[in-house]
Length: 156
Image (tube, rainbow, N blue to C red):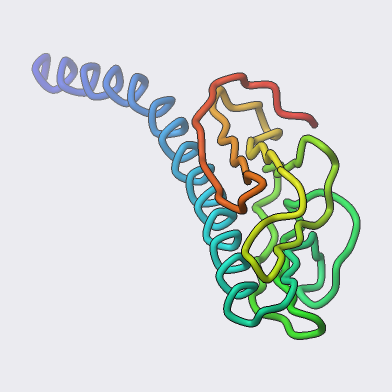
């Protein structure tokens, strides 16, 4: 009986240590997925602009059809004229995707170059601000890069 009690106590201690670590792992995986989706969309928009020899726009979209105002966590859409190339669904509630300059759209020229540089921060704002973030930077040449940060200052 004593051995069983000791075993249960050890298992409880291990679980108490492991659960917070799992939360951080889940957060890291989710942030990575959102960053990868954004990077893939940027690569696709740049490639489609070159292929179609036309301007391709990535913009915030809550309906998956039209550009809108607001945060990128609503989702986004890739447009070539009126043609929808790709739709990205909204982020899970509690996650934020913000662009530091407040841009609601990015345009890629037929040469593949972007019109402006953009910096996106992907973070969790609820239920608690996570200590991890992803920063996606899109250069003027249209190339994205991802950086892991631990600022933990996600806007609410």
